[in-house]
Length: 296
Length: 334
Ligand SMILES: [Zn+2]
Image (cartoon, rainbow over all chains, first blue to last red):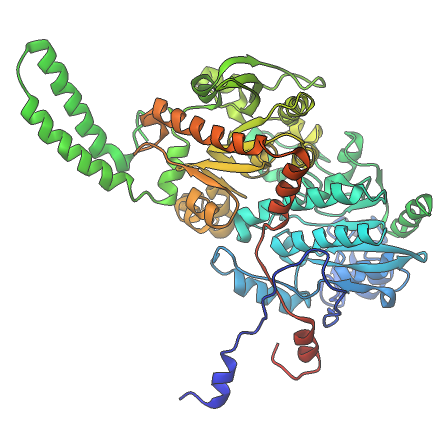
C-alpha cells in the first residue's frame, strides 16, 4: 500500500541543468573518502612478490621499497602527494553526474557499486590547488573507478578544467591512469569525448599557460589517444603501461609473443613519445620545477 | 557467409538466381518464360522487403563488412573526376592502408582522404586489410593541412575496422598520432565533411572523422569498440557479437539520435553492393549539398560552429549545489 512517504520518494533525485559554458563558481561536494589501495593490513607486491606492511607502503607513496614497483594511487591520495595540502584544493564540477545514455545493461548498477566502493562520484576529480604555492588547475583520473575510463562526465569535467584554467591563466596538470580508455558503456559518446578534450587542450594552449600530462599505470586507448598525449610536457611513472592498443590485442593480431618491456614507460621514452620518466617521489619536485620555469 | 551471401538472405539470392536463369533461357532458346519470371519477381520483391526492411544491428554490421561493398577508391572513382592520388607521410613510408589526393567534385577542387581496404587477398595484404599505421594517419593529416593551405574543402570517406594494433604501430606512436590528428583536424579553416561509408572503428575512425558534418551510410556502423571485443569484455564470448551490436547503439539511426551524425545516406535495399551506381549518386548529392552550405561560411564562423558542436556532445546530469548541501547535512536522501 502506498503511503504518503512513498509518494514523496517518486520525485526525481536529481535536478537536470543544461551545462552552460564557463558557468558558475566551484561547488564543494561531499568530500570523497579515499580508500587505501589495496585493502587490508598487508599488500603483496606484484613486482617482487614481497609482502609489504600497508602503513609502510603508504608512507612510501605506495611504491615498493624493495623493487620500486609503483602501486595504483587513488585520486585523493594523489592530490595529497602533489599539492601543498589538500586543504587548499577546491573541487570543481563535483556535481556533474553520470547517466546511462545508451541504456547499457548493468551500467547503473556497476556505477552505484563503484561509487559505494571508491567514495568517488566519477573517474576524475578536478579543481584548483597550490603546488609550491603556485596556483594550478588539476585533474586526477582514478583507476579504481571504471579503470579511469572516459565517458561523458570525464570529458565534460576535463573540458571545463581547461576552460576555467584559461580564464584564470592557470597552468594545468592532469594525471591519467585509465586502462579502459574510452568508456564502453557510453558507446560512441565516449569516443566523442576524445574530440572534445583534444579541442579543449588546444584552446587552452592559446592562453600561453603550460599543460603537464602525467601518465601512470595504465594509460591506454582513448585516454592515451586524446588529451593525455597532448601535454606540453609529458611525464610518466616508471613501469607504467602506455599505448593505444591493448597488449593482448596486439599479441593476438601479430600472433607472436610481445617483446619484453613492450608499451612500458621506458618503451615510450625510447621511442620518443614522452619527455621524462619520473619516480613518484620526484613527481612533486619536477612539477614544481615546470611551474617555476613558467612563473609569471 | 558463402560466396558473398549471408545465410539470412539466401532464399532471396536463390530466387534472384532462378530469375536470371529463366531470363537467360528465354534469350538462348527463345522459349517464353515471361509469366513465370513475373511471378517470381513479385515474390522476390516481397521477400526483399521482408528481409531487408527490418535488419538487425548485427545484420547491418555484416552488410558494412560485405566483401563487395564499395571501397574508398571505388567511391572516389564514381563521384569525382580528375583524381590525383598523393602518397607518403614525408617521414616513414607510404601507408597504402590510407589513400588520399586531390580531385574535382562537380567541378569543385577538393582533397579526399580515407582508409582503403583491399578488394582481393593480394590487395588486402598490400593494404594491411585497411588498418592504417601511424604513417597512414600522418599522410591523411598532411593532405588535409595542404587542403587548408589552398582553401580546398575536405572529404573524408571512412571505412576502417581500427588503427592497426601492432608493435611498430605502437613504437611509432599510434596513440599520439590519433590525438594529433583529432586536434589538428578540429581547427582546420576549411569545410570538412566526413562520411562513414562502412565500418567506423573507434579512434582509428575518429582520427580522420572530426568534421563540420558527419554523414553515415544507412548500413554503416560507428562505435567506440567493435561488437566482437565488446562481447568478449562483457561475456567473454565473441560469439555474442550480434547481441553486443544491439547494446552498443552503433547504427546510423542511433547515432543520429545521439547527435553524433548529421544525416543518413539511404542505401539501396539489401546494401550498397547491390547497386553501386545508385549509392554513389546519393553519396555525391549529399556531400555536395553539405559542402556548398559550408563553403558559404567564413572560416571563423565555420570553426566556431564546429567546436560548439563537439563541445555539446555527451550526456550528463548535474546535481545543484543546494541539493548537494542538503545531502551533506542529512536533510535529503542521497
Ligand atoms: Zn616490490
